[in-house]
Amino acid sequence: MKVTVEITRRPEIADPQGTTIQRALTDLGHNDVVSVRVDRVIHLDVTGEDPETVRTMVEDMCRQVLANPVLEDFTVAVGE
Amino acid sequence: MRAAVAVFPGTNCEHDVVHGLTSLGGDAELVWHRETDLSGFDGVVLPGGFAHGDYLRTGAIARFSPVMAEVERMAREGLPVLGICNGFQVLCESGLLPGALIANRDLAFICRFVEVEVTDTDTVLTRAAELGQRIEIPLNSYEGSWVDPAGTGRIALRYVDDPNGSQDGAAAVANRRGNVVGVMPHPERGVEGLLGSSDGQILFEGFLRSPVMA
Image 1 (cartoon, rainbow over the protein chains, first blue to last red):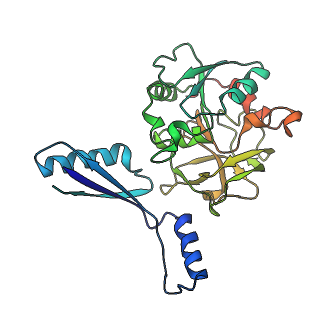
Image 2: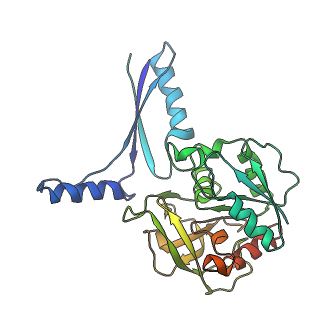
Image 3: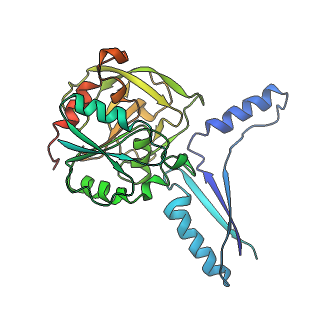
């Protein structure tokens, strides 16, 4: 089963990489960009039949290691 | 003191730490990250480098290395636990220290001497120093900016001129008991005049003399 985990940095935590990219875009004339955030997407292939069981398992992985609870939130999308 | 210096795949400051501690009369020994028994040691240092390639996040994989169970035990027992640079990141990831480390404010890899001021002397790193004392040692990091949304960290050293956007200018952070400390600049690279500074000695001396913290 394909699972996509999106890990996003909380809005209140600075993202220097996003800020730098935004500055570069502005330098290139893209003045309509008001904010850039760089986040992380992890693709997993997991054995399992029941999407909800797989989701719970991957959410546990997020809390344990994939995301840092001090900085980040996560969403889990289970495909087929 | 007999100190264990933990070596993860990608650690690269372990010999400098052993040299620094032994040159001040300590007994320091390298231990591989798969070690599961540190019962013969009175303290442990997690040195700088790129443990497990810094993959996922700095320190995220290292915190699950087998040796970390012993580091957690020693922290619990009040023994001195010191993380330097990457070791600081590992201690934050493991939850032994509050907060987390993110990329420097200006996205620059900073590699130069910085001046820090002692703001708390009741920690295993700063107990031999004086409050307000200024110390110059090298900083060498990219993800060196400490953030602590909960605001529970205890700051042991503060940058005189904050180079990386660290919250409250923190250069070293302790747990509530003061026995677990993470420091971003490198004391081991400032232990003798030949290196450009011997200011790091006072920090290692404090660590070597640390009793069990209540």
